[in-house]
Image (cartoon, rainbow, N blue to C red; front, side, top):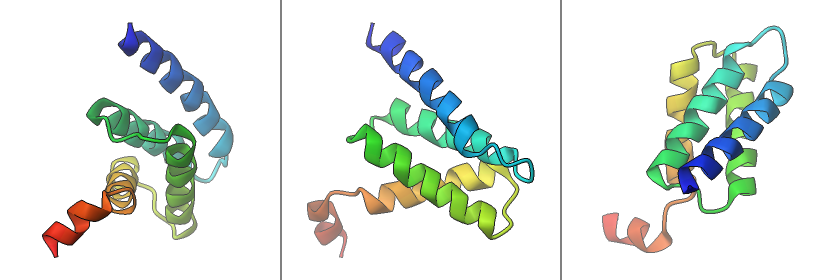
Length: 96
């Protein structure tokens, strides 16, 4: 049942991504958002939904502004940025 809830949630936010990235010059941005969000949900990396949605939208928007056009590349960079930004402070101290 939780998978169904997540799929419904992903579908709703996929629609939101289409609205956010409705810019004709970069159709790959919405797909990059969908890919990154799906990956983060499946791996359990989403702790705060709103922060994640907002963070991904901002990261991908910055990439589009810099001229990025590859949906896979943008998704991978957004996922990596999310993981760096939302990492546990204790884990960060252990690595250092």
